[in-house]
Image (cartoon, rainbow, N blue to C red; front, side, top):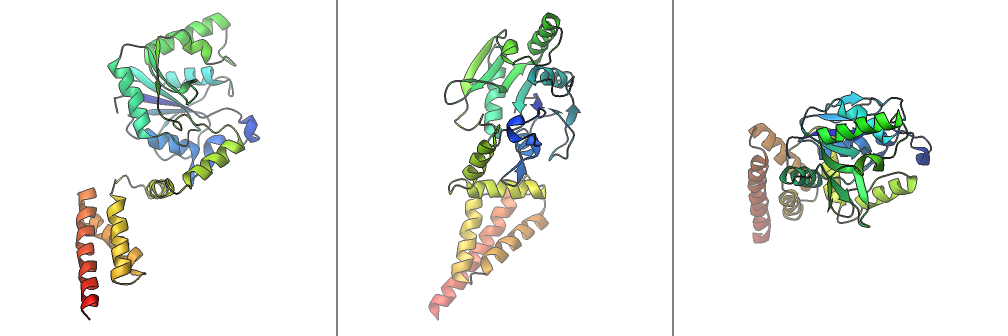
Length: 280
């Protein structure tokens, strides 16, 4: 990821959710805010505008004036803490935001001359809270709005973005999906449990819960579990994969390669067991 601070807007009253603490709502066992922060794990500095809460990574906290003053006021508060020439601006309720989308936005800004790069949704609508901007033009427009209106409270984001030189890029159908209603929350929760998504979502959630950033080939481990279950006994599958993880951790410092090597040895052993059974 290009060196770029992040501002996450995680305040607001969440009226359509009955005033619940929206950034703390769980989707797939992880708070919405934590899911957004996970997509920005390579960022040098993340500023969260909103009420303080436990988070999966260290952040800098800011608060708009007055609290609940709307997105422009919140963005202004976040910008005061930004230290880089470019800034990624995100809302705190994006359950499907991924690192690849973050990288695409920041690299498009780096490689072009525009003052900002906005994502657009499937219907072509601008998503100013899934966007990357050059910091100084953004601060300039915030200052001009404050002078013109006397206060930033309650101002819509379009007043800010309409004065910037922007390019627009699609990021995929779900990158800017946000959770404004309980129906949105239900849709997101159902989506991650679909057959094609549930395993990756579960592994990501487990790694986040355990504080593990190691990327491993899940296919290798699934194949190993299958071989252990078929060649030895069904209960051998989870125990074997646990032992492989333990062995890789003891190897220390080798990352995914250590997991792959331990899995290879265990799979070869399971194969020998199966062959012996076939010879009897």
